[in-house]
Image (cartoon, rainbow, N blue to C red):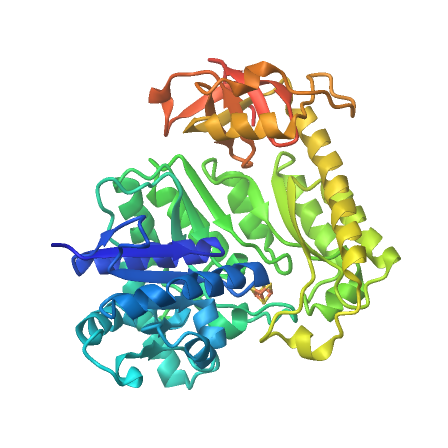
Length: 498
Ligand code: SF4
């Protein structure tokens, strides 16, 4: 009988993609994915170290499985991803029942490790005999080792298999791995290692493979994706802009191409031109500002000033007035004053962000900030700043969404809107077509579960009536009204303007 695998993923899209690749590899070994953690032959957690909360969840899951391992020594338990890399042997100390530990830069080794763990599990009493560890060790490898790791990881990406029934509504393709930026609050350069850029033809082939298998939207992934540059052996260089044009041209049957995450510094005019010129590249930029004050940006080691960030927003909007820009913010970073925090609100208003992911600073082990700065902003101040920035962002979203009322927008249909209906009902807030800043309670019509939900090119959620057979297709929707989370409209034949 086929062995079963439970694979749970925490963190960013990069981890989601890693899990997909791992799943593909283990399927090749005969494993079948299951949602039932309690009966799975192999349980693997793909972990994230960016937020403490995600790590706590993993510690808790590992504790819950201690009894199971004691009762069934043949059961194999693994931890992969950033937490495995950052915590290393500490995970074994706290959880001696774990069999496998594998960092993100060694995932190509995981199938062999699982095979070895299955073979040796249960038959040994000497715990060290059944431990299988592959960590990057130190993110700064000797260059020859780094090259081997690059090649092995490239093989992992290239090994991607698409199986019938796979959900390809959100397909990811990695174009770079790792990061060289060393922002002081971030653990990624220490867990994923230095930046490595994949050969362009391999990226194009992978996107092509996904489109042939039915993908309607592909998102290119990289930690600082716009810094992509591949140097060919003959001296040519493929820039990020070149890559965008090449992928767009090679996949005329792909309705939507996206990319995340952009680094605000050095975003070239050529790459912005490519976004403007290629009609199927979504006008969506996730380019985290992180802060609005230059002193704080310097403490964070972001490498740009807020003036440079504004200039980047200006260049993007000059070319694409309808572009949706999304940011991340850290509030309550050490030594941040009220006045400095206020500048975060200023940049939200200036850039008219479509959305901001706002986090209260918390010192993370393995980062520069935890050693260099005292976490001196009280929790209640952090919370107040977090709420204030959320409120400012909410006002901006309301204005952005109200401006879309009356427009006809291209929407990719994702399916039934049950979740969105529930969310609209839960928030109880709705903005009418003539929105002027007041809110009123949502009406009963939002609870109708047969409505469809889709996304605009700018990633706004749109709810409208339609037939489920439209799922996966593009339709034009005239927007009648908007809430903070959602646009509501009706299907129309006329051409979309956004
Ligand atoms: S750019 Fe900064 S925040 Fe982003 S992954 Fe690299 S170090 Fe972390």
